[in-house]
Image 1: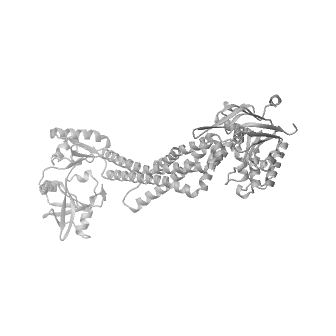
Image 2: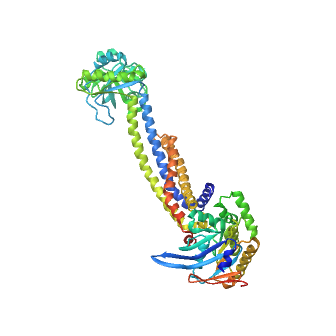
Image 3: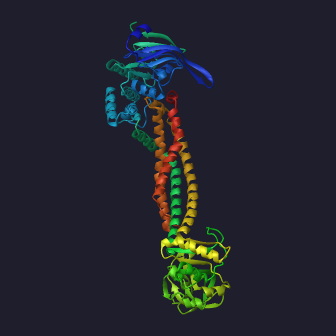
Length: 238
Length: 395
């Protein structure tokens, strides 16, 4: 698997023998014990595993929110170990879009301004931000909800706002951490439909973290994590 | 992230917690208002002193025994009336030299009785000081030379003893019996340094010396022909007196020097008051710091999210620092408004003078902004350094 992957164009995300150890109250806790994963551009993958398996840690690493203890992590070909905190933030801003289980929208801010938030840190002008935010909201079918605040939207709509926010900066990859975890089954599948469509239409790579098998099954690749290691890496059609 | 964005986010955060922002600001408001009021009163007091000293007349040199220092006990004078003639030869203008010997005494006219500052002086007094007469005449050279028992009343004393009746030509008794004939009444002048100068009564210095049983004078005042002559005259007068009275020290000071000395004292006093007021500003600043820390804790998730979306440490730091500075400068502006209004009210309703200077609100504003930076840095750094992974998980 790694041989064929290495021959392709630069990966969107690539982890090579990554470990991550936390120090909690004086005790070292190892969350990842040598994980190698490569996510290509335009891929649609799910990371599965029981809670405590290390899947969230892996997701944080892939999203540049954290740095590995050992091993190499490359985002869009750049080794994060060599980047400063500021550069890491810029990388995150440019290449990664996040979707969270609990949406993480700013409560007192309109849908449009929530979506525009990543562009604030990119120095985009206000008018341009608002235009692009409206566009992104239209992509997720919420062009009629621009001025609504999160509290005035349903759970499914809130998650679509969050997806629009993840997309607004044109990232190479969207990392979705239990994106359907707070939604009922039907709404959850609507959100998955949306992610699938965006993946297909815009070519953005999508990495889901989930513990729900039927959600994971909708991805074209399932990476199973257990006890800090990749247990199985299954691609559809292989 | 640009400053405008930080400003917008900060303003939003303050608006959402209106009550809390207002209460936090209150400490700064009170501190700034106190500083502005106290500086205004201090400045007002200095202005008052300045105008009173200037009201004494221009180019006047006060000659007194001993070294001049404000607050030092006055020395017993060895100067005598004939020093006028002696100094006249030094300055070349005997007419411009007045003497003074004063004592607080009870004065009486009929059944009316009051307390007055009896000033023994010479006929040159009005050449040196500007004290217009309302009625009658001033003391004359003959009055002084022949030790006449005549008196010129201050406006206040005249009113208390005689009411609306013209006192000229009437008799008063001074210090339990000695009778004086009123020859004139001075115009109203108000008070200098809290001394009611309208309660003065002027008598010939020779008469006063006999009345008090002394042969000295307390002070000599010399009017210089022009400002340029002042320094030379000061030196000449002191030299002349010190050679006449061997082993004695004399000082000759001008209004400007008096102003300088009093100004220094009042300036120090104002400084002390302002420093005390500044302590409340400090306490207000600690309140700001405290509330900002609470704000950072409350918005941990928001900080985590912003970081996940690409905010750098300094973006978050700027956001909270701007919020803190906005809080204190808004408080500062409110404090300045309150302080200026307070100073004007005090000035209008009480005898305490208050003067607003352009620099005190400006300094108050700058200081409140500084307080915002100083007390905002710790919370803002804490926010900036939050680990996004942990921050996102916070409840």
